[in-house]
Image 1: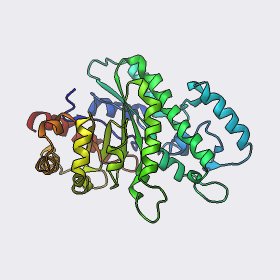
Image 2 (image 1 turned 90 degrees about the horizontal axis):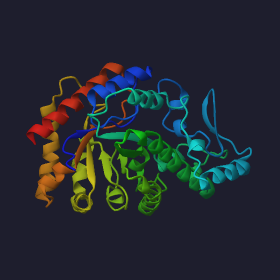
Image 3 (image 1 turned 60 degrees about the vertical axis):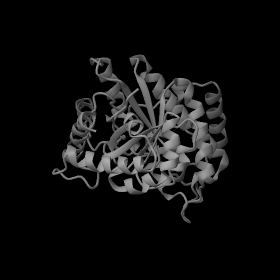
Image 4 (image 1 turned 90 degrees about the vertical axis):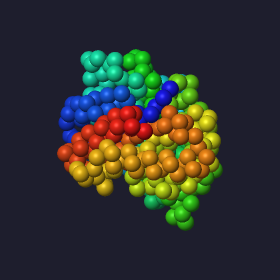
Amino acid sequence: MNFKGLATGIGSLPLIDAQKAVDLILRYLPVAPFWPQLPKTNSREGMIAQFSENLPGLKIDGSGLHFSSQDKEKELELFYEKFIAQDLNYFKISPDFASGLHAFYQRLNNTDLSAVEFIKCQVTGPFTFCFGINDLEGKAIFHDEILKQAMIKGLAMKALWQLDLFKKFGKKMIMFFDEPFLTGVGSAYTPIDRRDVIEIFSELADSLKEQDCLIGVHCCGNTDWSMLTDTEGIDIINFDAFEFQERFVLYADNLNSFLKKGGIICWGIAPTQGYNASLTPDNLAQKLKSGLDILVKKGIDRNLLLERLMISPACGLGTLDDRKAEGILSLLNQTSAFIRKNL
């Protein structure tokens, strides 16, 4: 399939009204819409808390998400019983944790979907998730091998539950794992290495591949992109092309191999923090073209780059104001049309 210029979103929007959020998504991203994460509504819709429901040791109260060792062994036993049984309903994401997901699902039930080619869903990635929660001693639960493995499997089940929920619409599914924590790989302050990333994402990809979905990884900063190009099962790499394009194209050889085996690059070309209303589709397309030109000079076929090119915002929009978020989605929509016509 020719993806040239296909536009989708990352996840979060700043709106509180789920119906209005869905309105914006279907208006501006009609070909590959996504369900909106709405972190300003309550603490349960935060990036990590949203996917914590029924995962062992994790508790939500009025002050947010906490780890509790009380009944840990009992919870792990129940967790693995449900996991082995592939009990998707146990791993559901309830309306209290994702009002945007359920509003989106209900809207799709009552909407003409003839323009929709893809439905995009998302889960917080295992590194961001496991380093975002500390145990009672203040250490990230990533360092507890038993808990880490449970969380990886639990996040995979959260993804599978979404794929199962939306399969009734008969559209190709895209599942993103959002991993801002990967920006720290290789630094002295981030105790994970390339092998960790490849092993864990290979496991996640294996668990989802039977669903015939496209699996993407979003990282909104710079990282060692070869970790993702070299992981079997990852179909889409999404990066902040507005801020980090010059660093991304340094991985031309890895990207060439990735594209040749069917990979897709999703260029986060619409800026989030750097957005201003004077930006035009031509501005963004020219910046994107400069990145493509470098990769072509390094030996990648231009037609392959264009056929395997998606676009998105650079990152989630949840921290912005409503007007700016809509402006970015509108700009993305216009840029998608511009790319398809002019590049």
